[in-house]
Length: 169
Image (cartoon, rainbow, N blue to C red; front, top):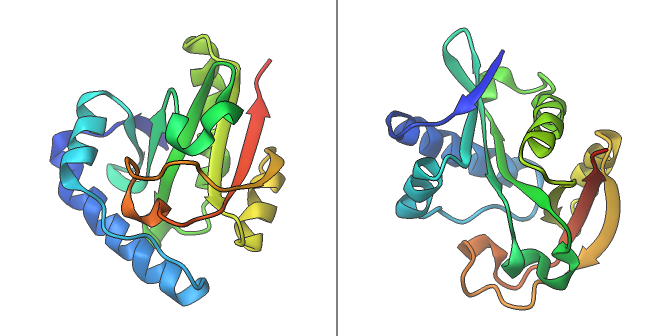
């Protein structure tokens, strides 16, 4: 297993995995992501914030990080943190524990970048993911509604989110 930055060559596969994730979300939950904006993902790649997990050269999982998240976290996003978003596992690799691998990687990345926290969010009524993320070591901070979602991907409109945080010492 190798965690490295995604490249523009990965765009088609990233969007294929997003489509697969939406199809899966529709089978297990009453909400699902809306389509993502390709230019947004291209910017994330150029900024080095889009990552992938490779297994024998195959993209097994993708995720995005941010170093601030004011539109979602608002004033609750105090302190130095990285924010993990859009974890998507290739269906051929589901159940491989990639969230835990991402957390292990993120702990090191937090230290390397001089940050203190790892933060995540998910839908506020997704009990299954809330339980899973706490099992992965995150503290569940509660359910909140972002103040302004106009600058966020479409799936954030009119949403309540479960917030998670892990302090890295």
